[in-house]
Length: 454
Image (cartoon, rainbow, N blue to C red):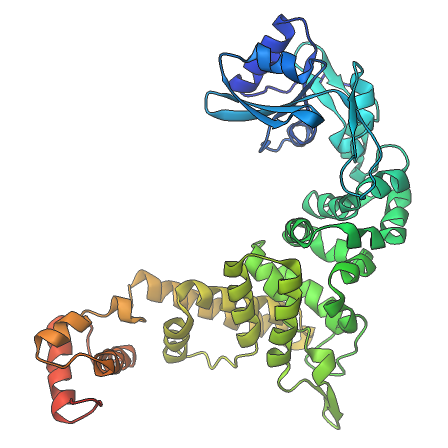
């Protein structure tokens, strides 16, 4: 094997040096080693050592130490504002809840510590002087593009059922494959996911959805997805019998997911946007139809997202996009401005991106022209933004205070007047200039154009 060199950040090197100077072994371990070997920037640098927790605390008495999980041998040390998790070599006991060990015992063997980890690509350690420690050939698996459990995959998954989704997530994010024995255990032991909290499933599934290999992994492991999101199973193999679609509903859905930018809101919206189709299917001489499926999809999405216990911001935005994804776009600037006014610029852009992903996953016969039209609308939105076009009350050159200063009475009529003025600006009959808007307000007031005393 060629010599491998990884350069930890200065605070991490300081941690290694202090532990070694005190007579202990110390290595960076896990994901940071994996990512560094891939040429990617590690997000977290974790260390492992044969020093016991109290000895770790003693080594770093001059630094801020957080006793993260002493019973499991983990201490967090803050060096130059960088938190570094340092964990004592350990052997895990029984996992009665299929999630966390009931107990741990400390060991002096780095190999024993690495043996308790989930996948070979995460069971590597490194020290700048001692090089790579890789007893389970994780570097070879990384080069070969393989996710493989350390030891018997059934034992690893039985210990922690979340590892089933983690295997799929790593395969998606790294765009690599799950080796056959590990893959077979993923399928066979999927019911272990019932022991895992919804929040942890949501975290792993969101990362999986945003991975490059999401379409492939969710095709190969559809049964696992349906274990945690049973609302999606009716889409599987459902023939749309529609000239606009080459694929069944589930395949179309995954292709739409892959066509979206890798952002959680968009990928979740794409995953859920057509869940209502199997429940609204009708057939006539023209083929299959799904009238009202967006409304049903939104109801199903509500149940699925609540089950996942996702955050409120993502919940609200995904539901909005699912509800509106079937909006017929007439291609006009006026309609686009109205959409922005109704849901805001960010949501409008996401809706256009979802539309583009949706048509990308439709029949090939009209795909190119529909993608081109989606790109045109995205370009038009970008132009309106660049021109600071007035598409919301916030951008209007007058405020409620300006109308009150004209002597207009307080109440809902102020809001009505502002909306009337915005309509005029958006349709191009009035410039977004304060003087012109106030003059128009006086004119509308004289015409009794709005209620409550105007």
